[in-house]
Length: 302
Image 1 (tube, rainbow, N blue to C red):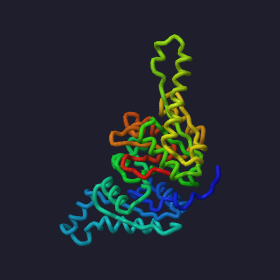
Image 2: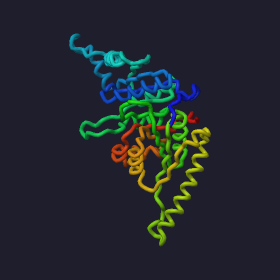
Image 3: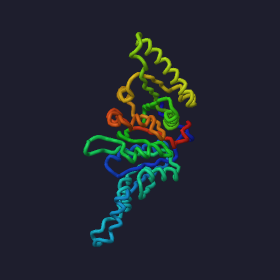
Image 4: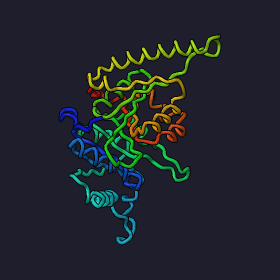
C-alpha cells in the first residue's frame, strides 16, 4: 500500500467533532486532528449542553451570588480552549444548547460538514463500551458519515473492512470508503448461511454451489457501486459462511484492521448488525473504529 496523499478533489473539506468533553473523547479528538491534518480540512469542535444543565443555569438568580453555578456554556468553552492549546492547527469552537443528536445534525448540515467524528460512551456500571443513545440516533439520520472512534490515533488508517448485505446502504458504505480512503487496503466482507443444507444429502455440494452464487452476487454488487477502476481493482472481496460477528472479529484480528465501515437506512438494515439485538456481542468483537454511513448521506460517490 502506498501512502500517497489523495487528490485535492477527493479530500473532505470540513470535519465536525462532536464531544461531551469526557476523558474518553480524547481519542476522538486525536483522530479528528490527525484527519484534519491529513486532508488539510477545517475542523469544528462542537459541544452540546443538554437541557438538564440549562436548568442549572436558569436557577442562578435564586441563590446567593457567590453560590451561583457558572454558565455551562462558558465552562465548556473554557475547557475546550484549554484542551486545544497544543492543537497543531486551528480548530473552530462551537458550544450550543439542545438535544445532542438534533443539534449535531443541524450544525453538520448548516456547515456542510463532510464527516462527523465522535467517541464511544462508556457504562461505568457495566464496565463496557456502547454507542449510546445520542450516537445511535445521529448515525441513522446524519447528513454526513459518522466516525465512531474507539482506539488511539497513532497513525492514519491502514486497513479498512466494509461489511455488506448487498443492499443499497452497504453500497453507499463501499462508495464512501473508496472516497475517503482511496489509498488504504480495503476488503469487502459478506457473511452468509447456506439455506436448506440440513435437508440435502450432499451438504458439501450444496455449500459449494451456494458459495458460487454468493460470489457472483458479490461481483455484481461491486460492479453496481461503480468504483474508480483502481479502487475496484485493489478491493479484496470476501464471501464467507458464518455468523457476521464471528467473521468480523476474526478478520479484524487477523488483518490488523483499524476501521470497519457499515451502511444503514431508516430501519437499521446493516446498522442493526452493530446496534441491534447483538449489540453486546458486536461491541465485544469490534476492537477498532467504525464508520457508519446513514441514509441521509447522498454524496457517497468517489
